[in-house]
Image 1 (cartoon, rainbow, N blue to C red):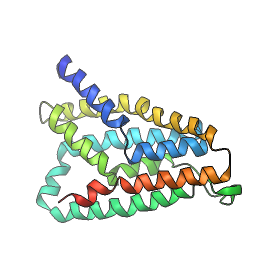
Image 2 (image 1 turned 60 degrees about the horizontal axis):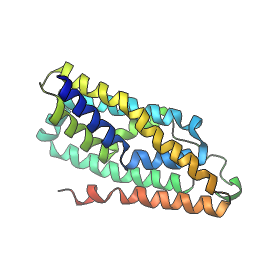
Image 3 (image 1 turned 45 degrees about the horizontal axis):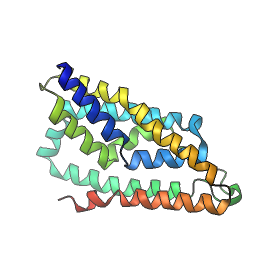
Length: 198
């Protein structure tokens, strides 16, 4: 991979991971409700899960979708169902008076697994491999995955810190509940492209 291609890939990776999407909306909500430190496993799960996904997509998973389109349809249905479940969790992350003692940030494994039903992650992974893996080889796909691994944590940190700063405004149970429901609504809204896709 030439330096120019590497620079372009790094820019693409940072912009695509830093723009709004299901991961970043959930990180912002987690930062607001649980703080930065408790959200670190969530961020690391995204980093590892997404990088692995890019690698596996590159070495042949898309060929399975080409041969068996029903698998892709099942993945889309799973994406919608799981995102709705996560929106419900976000909406109830920190209810008034701490009524839900089970509220907690997403774990490392949950965040890593979520990448497989995250429609934005699929689009980013396919685009990155198509545009920047200059050869259809394992080292080329591994290079793309490595660049994403490097830029994902800083990009995700921005959203977590933003959520942490927003928490300063959430000085009442009513404000916190309203914030969580808005974030849940935005998460559901991120399904729009999935539902319109052919």
